[in-house]
Length: 178
Length: 422
Image 1: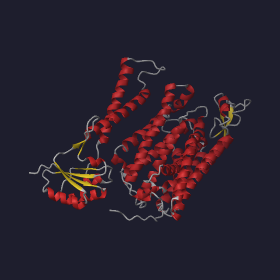
Image 2 (image 1 turned 120 degrees about the horizontal axis):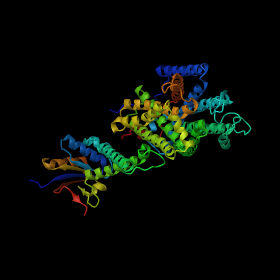
Image 3 (image 1 turned 120 degrees about the vertical axis):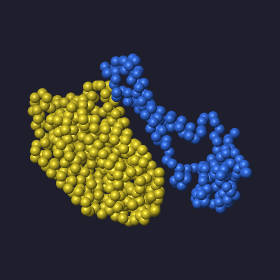
Image 4 (image 1 turned 30 degrees about the horizontal axis):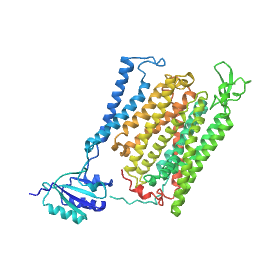
């Protein structure tokens, strides 16, 4: 039993990598993920990645922020300590709008950053986990989960045929920056 | 699934579009004639000014759109730039129409009884500052506030500004169209570079002069009141209604078999722009409202006081719902912006909404409160609006049909536009 956990096909050209994805898909080899140093047009559709749900998260964070700000203002200015400001009623809704708006934006922005960190396992102070260091530099990497995907030699051949400059059989999932 | 695009396709202005736009013009002429005949002259003039201004603003938005695309060196819009260019080509006529309305409104006068019970002669448009003798201390009609503003706000300088602004905008519109059509003939980058330069100059001039244009044409209807936000508020209204008009024309052309290369990615961009600038419009609207509400100075609050009368209050609220809440809800999600029919109805909604927006600027100070809130908008409003919509459609589509092809085939960003994907 091979100890290989992941097979990585390293390409130096995005078109060759897209060709590699195509060949793997034709041979029904499931692709774990693809890592590229730059955005590749149309790759989401090719890999069948679903649309991001970050927008829904943003909407919910915005609703939360708006509600929190409005409730806070209501509690402070109407319930707890009503003040006479320019002879206006305590519950003067137009005055509440700027703060409510700002908090909606603030909650949405922070919430989206937090969601992004959570989803990508990126936190300040944590060494990012990557499968191949050069995927952030000049290599286009296709990762294939080795378990159940046998024989490994066939996968290696498919990748080589498509123009991979290097095929790695890694026993660990990630190599970390240290 | 790549379709075969015919870049030499010409727009044929015939059939239903021509019949309907001519019918619209006929309705407008009948409405204006009936308005004069039934004695509602001031109301007819106010509506003509509103629609003349709206008409000119939509054409100006076409030039602004072209200029923004050149300055940003945007690629996505290259294949559909002919449509805003057709708007730009229509501006000279829109300018003549607007100036004619303003001239007629300033020169035709009627006698009314003022608050002090005196008989005074006032023009149908700009009655506060346009009347004879407002700046003369010996005159019955003397108004100290207006006299203080008269070094800027006098008929001669007012008309000069109007003519110069609209003339300069038309000139830049003409140049941008000319460079683009030259580009089709000879290719190369020289015309694109010229367009870029002219677009830069135009945007600077436009940015400084549109607020003054709005102050002059619309804000001076209430010449004793002023708001520095008014210019940007009007700019926001102009830009979002112009975007809605451009999008609507492109959708209708596409649904009638033209512009085969325009797809949901381009509409996604337009949806984002309409969504974003609807929010921007609300921002400027609210910025103006909040400052006036918060300071509560009588000379400023009078503007919203008039719009808070029971006859105007439903329209006041409807204005915010139609121009803010509905575009936001209808265009929020990504997929919504890519549904062509949904976008089409939002465009119509935004165009009608900004008619109401302009109506709320013009009407309380000219037409004034009517018997009921629902009689505030009647057949004169509808007729004149349909008339000008027909006039715009007719002139713009005529201009569009004069282009040799609907695609600018030598535009340096044409391929980028054809492969636009988001």
